[in-house]
Length: 327
Image (cartoon, rainbow, N blue to C red; front, top):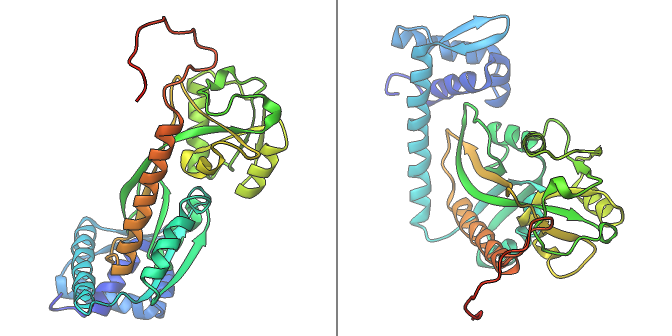
């Protein structure tokens, strides 16, 4: 980086991540010719070609990809140095832009905010609710500091880490007549009329794979990318839906929804925290995530107590045996 300006380095990073000089220019608030000049200057300095241009876009050469990775690491070090310097002031201030799926906004978010906001009143919070593809694009464009989305294959320009592996639950209304919190086999839940997210949703593909693999016959399906609408419809009808335990913890012990753990086999969803690979998390982002993860862990403890080992609906009764009295 000593022979190239930070602006030139950022231009290379943007082109590599966006796969287009036009989109890179938009992201960097520059002109397309300006981005092209920056990249050309870096190529002249290095004496190698960094990108292959074609009608389908721009792709990095092996040298370009290696240079990109080093540049991202270097820019990340600069961001880390800035955050460490800010930490020494002892104040937590600034903007914090977070993207969350409805899975997390229904039950995890409010307790987190209730603790975080009074502790850090100088942090300006901006929270966006959306589905994974929208949130992922906002993180790539640096419109969000981080987002929580279902685990996926990964994309260039993003860094991710596992946040939680969460058990999936069957949600139904009273008309289905299921015993609350009793484990169920989906193939035994007939008629299986299910509300699912649209085909672009990562969870949709995972659920369909589970249905096909474990003999679950879908007799009717309704696509709905509206969480509140899904829950309200299920509560007043004989349709069902499948959602992670994190979103349904408030339905334990009452309300208009009946929650049942999916069993034989259990079904899990993995969620990751994604952030731009060229940036480091701010102090306020790290503090928020610490409290957020603590609340996720608390919800899992609540579920562990609520679904003590129970007999799965449709499975044979276990043999009688002597057991220790519950504590």
